[in-house]
Structure formats: structure tokens, C-alpha cells
Length: 144
Picture 1: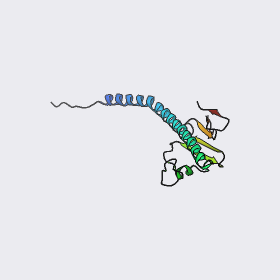
Picture 2: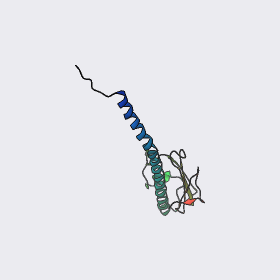
Picture 3: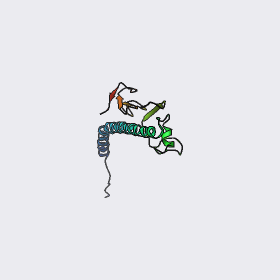
Picture 4: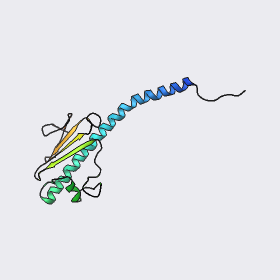
């Protein structure tokens, strides 16, 4: 008499159900963690940009008119050997605008609600502001 080893269909269905329940509980937390990490990375990039721009102004007398000038001045690393900035956070789009005397930086999630819940704004005052909408501006709430 031969004995067969293995799992019954019921046992396999129970294991699959347990895995599905664990996934249903864990995935929303994972997505929220990713959004929070994207936002923290965007804030960090804005702080770095503020510091680098002040160093640039001290060295050259004006703010950089293009963020690529930070790379050319040797203040931050290059991603491609040119003026592309290395290490930018994923999930956020950054727009830098400067006339040399003032500057603004906006950071918006690539997909609002998926990549992040907040948009950010920075100007030469060094205060980072946020909005839960599509874009942040000078009148929005400062981050703590």
C-alpha cells in the first residue's frame, strides 16, 4: 500500500486565503509609507536646494538662474556628466524659476494621491510651504 503525500485542495485554499488577508492589510500601509517617503525626500531636496542656492549667491552675487548652474559650480553632483542633477526624489516634479535676484521652487507629486498628498513651495526666504492641492504657493502653510 502506497501512501500519498501532499496537500489537499482545502489546505491550499486556506493558505491562499490567509495570504490574501495579509496582503489586503499590508498593501495600504505600504502605499502610505511610499507616499510619506516621497514627501520627505521632496522636502529634503528643497532644503538642499535652498542651502545650495544661498552658497551660490554668496559665491557669485546672484541666485542661479538654472538649477544646472549648481552642478557647473561644483556644488552638487551631476547625474549625466552635464547639468542634470543627481539623486532627485522619485514621484515628484520640480520646477525652478529664478531671475537672479529671487527664486521659487515648486515640487508637485507626479500623480496627486498616489506619489504624494502634498505639493511644496520654496522661495528665497527659505520657508518651505505645502498645500494638499495640485500646487503650493507663497501664501500656503509653512511646514514645521
